[in-house]
Length: 179
Image (cartoon, rainbow, N blue to C red):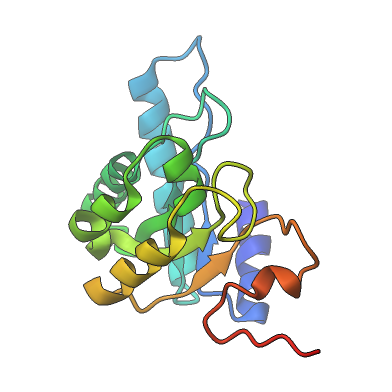
C-alpha cells in the first residue's frame, strides 16, 4: 500500500500516464492458479490507485528469468482481459519488441490481433539489446506496422547503445548528425 501510494504520488508530480506492473515470478511451492489470482488482485489494486491520476497499469511479457510466466503478447493480453473483467479498465499491454522477439514471437504478426490492448511500446534490437540495426529484429517493419494499424502512442527506446548515445540515434528518420 505505502509503496503504491508513493509511486503514484511521484507519478502524479511527474505527469506519468503509465506504470509498469511486473507480474511476478512463479514460486514452486505455491499453486500456479493461486499465484495468478493474487497477481490479478494486485493489478486491480494498482489500477485503482493509477486511475486516481488518470494513469494506466501496463502488463509486460519478458524474456528474463524462467519463473516469470508471461512470455508472449497473448499471455499479457489474458492478464489484461482478466483485470478488465474485474473492473480495472485502465490495464493494458506494454509491447516490448526485444522481450517478445527474444522469446520467439513474430512481433509484426502480433500487432493486428492485439493492437486494442497495446498502450505502450518499447524497443531494442535482438540479440544484444542494442539500438536498431545492431541485431536481427526488423524494428522499422514493426514500427511501420504499428503506425499503419493505428497505434499512436509512445515508443520508448530501451536499448543499450553500442556507440555514443547521440550516434545510437542515427537510425531515427529525423536524425541528422552534424560534422
